[in-house]
Amino acid sequence: MNRREFSHKTVRGAAGAALFSTLPLSSLGCQNQDRKLGIALVGLGAYSTYQLAPALQDTQHCYLAGVVTGTPAKEQQWMQRYDIPKANVYNYENFDSIVNNEEIDVVYVVLPNAMHAEFCIRAAEAGKHVICEKPMAVSVKECDAIIHACNKAGVKLGVGYRLQSEPYTNEIKRIVREKTFGEVRFVSAEAGYRSRGNPEQWRLNKSLSGGGALLNMGVYAIQGAIYGTGQNPISVSAQEFSTDPDYFKDTDESITAQFKFPNGATGNIFTSHSANVNRHYSAFDNGWLELNPANNYGPLAGRLSNGQELKFAHESQQKLQMDDFAKHVLSGEPNRAPGEMGKRDMMICEAIYQSIAEGGKTISLDLGRMGIVE
Image (tube, rainbow, N blue to C red; front, side, top):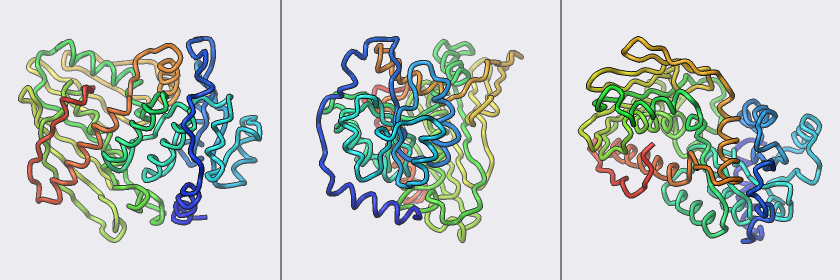
């Protein structure tokens, strides 16, 4: 079954599904920090297969408890590989019955972007805490719907921003926050890779992806510009470039955008599906910092203008991310990537697309009310 058939079948099945609004059975007693939360992965593509599932073998506060897939062959493979009981395996039609499964505390939605809102909302209404892979959705309206559903159900919501739990990224935040080199004046963030191969992949299908490079790697560049200044931008202008329109028929290939920040700093981001770019740079009154590489799965590397090299022990970013979310649920530790952060970034993405549509016009941003600045 290809992605188009998968999408049609999923939406059709969901339309007639009964939705629930029960508080999570598994949240009872969740203040017990010795307890590990059971996570169910929804969508068993490459990211779940090669990153999330292996990471869940090493996490301290959560574990792989179940899966949701539309491919029967994968059910058997995952049950055998990870010793998952049949009762914890679901498809897209019977997904809502997960409400009755006390072994599953968290649902991690790892589907194509256009499906995030539907399954995050269904998970919340089934009483499960939610992790939504980035981007949070394909519109601000969908982000609002996810946040509303989680608030109504009384469940926690996190976005799959793995770098928010990663030590190099958090060291940048510290340096910016403590003004180690004075006031930040400029930031540059680049995130992209060369995508070729299967022209039928879902990331090239706008009905499934919602966008191209910007909604894939671009959100990491946007985040870099924000934590590299410690501020939300107040305006943006943007341009789109295409060198291979026959391959990128439906989605953006490369985008660059320019930001202005409240303290007068400026910034530039670049994201692409045609170029391998992976760097962060912040310039201050009295120095600079650089990460290169800055946003892949690691290990990362960094240096400062005073000659210091940044070196941290490498751990799976996905392991750190999921453990951080589990600690947020179990003991109330800060949510490193709340739904409001995902919504903020989608507001910026929409402004970038608007600027491109209007010939690079500068678009004002009112993000201060979001309360998220890292």
